[in-house]
Image (cartoon, rainbow, N blue to C red; front, top):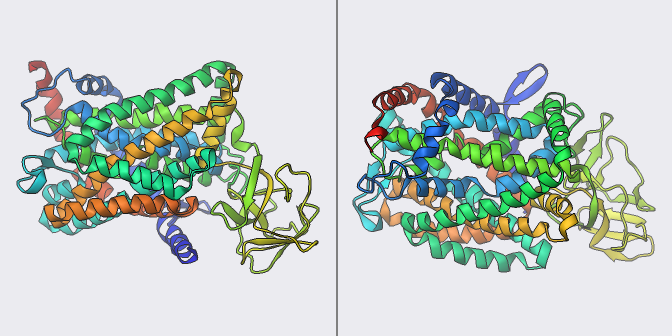
Length: 564
């Protein structure tokens, strides 16, 4: 596990966080290209995400559906399949992580990513429809396939096939991780926290459910997600709305805090320093991308299967994805976390000394933290760290130092002794050995969102957290189901129909593996591949933008929907 963590840290430093120095700070290239392409497409298309949003709603509703059009699923089923992949753990755990690291202001940058991402999503889906291909072999005979690998090769020409192959390989791997392992991990983590169900048990169960659905192909996936996606969204949104209405007086101050912290941050709970604007920006953009997937190139694969003869008609449907996912659902999550105050609160926690959420950090003069890798025991006196200078590692949970450590769950007996990072044990001055201690620690990820629901709905009883438990279960399974389709389309592009069954088998195995790996590891690996896979897609979108503009102008001048 240490080897995997070292590889992940290396790739995070030299792939995810590599950037350009600006004003003494490092601006990640991922942020620059993602926002840059989104702004470019927004301007080229005349802010289409605002002007044509209503038309997208009309098309998605089925108003203009023609069952004789070529394709495999309806506009609505294509949208729900894509939403099943986008509306997921990112809306629950991703928002919480963004606020945990970047503070409330990170939510603003998630909005910016979504607003620009609407133009990006429109463009990639329109191109996927334009350059989709017809399958004529195996179980997929008579269906269509599309996505960035096809519009890179067919839109840019055969000289770009290498980039299409590169994209397909990367997205196929990303499907194992971001769209699968992260989902399984969060589901398993929540079920273990709430019901003490071992991660391997929940991993086996959810793997079985995923396998039963994905073996039926896109038609079964479309039928399942067309029911599952609306149900899970309604459950989550209604619960969030109840909390917001009950705290209506906090809504305006919360929005004011979000806007203020977006440009003048005082650092997230686990941020790297007070006033670290780029930390707030980076985590907002990164989690925004993870949540709505605009520019990633995954959703176009689902949308390319829609029944239509007009590529733009599916493009306008795709406008709804970032709007629903980030502007609506992520905003509700963020409001709950901020207005209930759980984002900076501490909770009674068992500090597992060899757990995946344990880390060692030193407090700096500016109030921020730096990661440490201690090679010597850490002395604790009366529950507190004996040394707390800028070079002294402190026991941290969710990347934030725990102020006082206790040996008992009731937190009445402070620990005195030494903690050995190497063995993951604590030895008291009385000779007693412990593998875990207790203390007040901050939460992060899905458990933080769970705490927000629990506190927000407390006047109605102690049940609010079960909304998140149910939502995580539904979101995690539906996202994995949808991503399996993305992955096997990549496998089909690379190796043909013979690769589909082996790919699905590995996908199910990776779902189980994701369930049992530590949270920090699986999220970090997912972020690495997410940062890589956007590059070929965004380059293609920039080069094919004139084609998108041409198709858009032609569609809205002809108004083919009026003949329906």
